[in-house]
Amino acid sequence: MDKNELFRNIPKMDVLLEREDVSKLIEQYGRSLVTGAIREQTELLRELIRTTEDESAVRQATEELAGRAGDSLRRLCSPHVRKVINATGTVLHTNLGRAPISRAQAQRLTDIVTGYSNLEYDLEAGRRGERYAHFEWLLCRLTGAEAAMVVNNNAAAVLLVLSAIARGGEVLVSRGELVEIGGKFRVPDVCEQSGAVLREVGTTNKTHFSDYESALSDGTKAVLKVHTSNYRIVGFTESVDAAELAGLAHEHGVPMIEDLGSGVLVDLEEYGLAHEPTVQESVRAGIDVVCFSGDKLLGGPQAGIIVGRRELIDRMKRHPLTRALRVDKFTVTALEQVLLEYLSKEHVRENVPVLRMISETAASAHERAEKLAAQLREACPRANVGVRPCQSQVGGGSLPLERLESAGVTIEPWAMSVDALEHKMLRFDVPIVPRVTEDSILLDVRTIDSGDFPAVAEMLGEVLA
Ligand SMILES: *Cc1c(COP(=O)(O)O)cnc(C)c1O
Image (tube, rainbow, N blue to C red; front, side, top):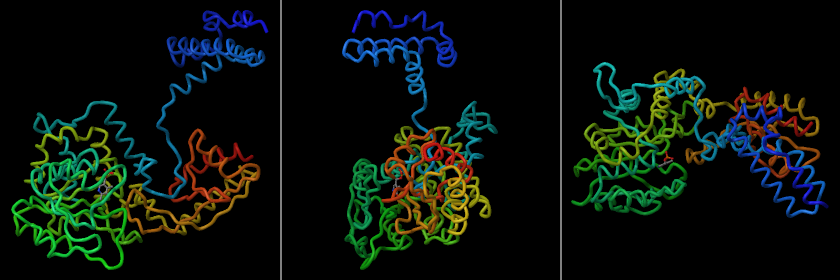
């Protein structure tokens, strides 16, 4: 084959730029990106000509040069973070962004962050204000605490609380509560980072009141209780009630801290779930500082919320770490929106997506699964589509033993393996993350919004029709 001829056939830049399809690309992406992409494709083509003996491949690549430049531009300029459809049934899926917020809450976010706001401006006084002021009163009203503040996430909250209260002294923690949360968050490590010395108390399965009593010393600066959110120790166990422990801490003149993990503000028993300690209960029990996540069962944005006694919260607000861990206007706005929903006990279940999802009954899930299955049967003639009961999880390290009775749509493709179908689903325009069993794909409807059903059916229809 005549390589010189093939080199001569490479279309020239000025010729390509005159083409209609390339003009469209210029309109969309701007001239500099388009010429850059064409140059890149031209270089690849030269490399191909130098290294291959396959003339037809070269001719095809020459033909498609502009198209390939367009494809690479589309890849380059499309966002990497994308909406996915969570069909796993795990409501707080840390890999899938944990808690979704509602459209109404998100709309408010758009309004605030696309312009200026009073983030740190006191409109009544006409001077500098505090970014926590927007929701501090709300958190106090909802939890019964005197004061509140918020940092980037709950791991940051624990670090700040210990740094502000216990640096240079000892913190007592039960051996049954030396938790690893995942993502490298381990209570002993965070303690060390804060400059406090961890004093382990009791044993893995049993820690008595007297264990704390005998561990308290002049060097003790705080007592810490950690909610074992992602595991349970069952059987021959004992731990000390928070109120009792707070009493002991106060007798010795040190604060009692609790890391609650999930941070529930509602009575989950009313939602048909096991009891999960609420923030209000901890405040009422006399805990001086309570911290919890914003994006677990609270259903808000990623945040670490700290509530408690004013004198201690003020100390944290002044701490140098606070500046490094502070939340931005996105978090402040979204968190205020979600907390406002909690003012109405009657409406919060509907308006906070996480609460709505965890409280969906098996009957409702079954009904919705039948709807999705009907749409899928229509769209996907080359698969068996069924409905069967399944169990969902809360996830996010919350309520680890709890299973939610749910319903799933099963898909058994005729002409491809289950793994191949899963692979395709993860590459859809809106990727669907399913559960996979040996012989079928399962879509647990608990975490799928009914509004997404038509899109799910359409995308699956494209590969199973
Ligand atoms: C989840 C959790 C954390 C970490 O919270 P993030 O908001 O994810 O940083 C800390 N402590 C406990 C007990 C938790 O369950």
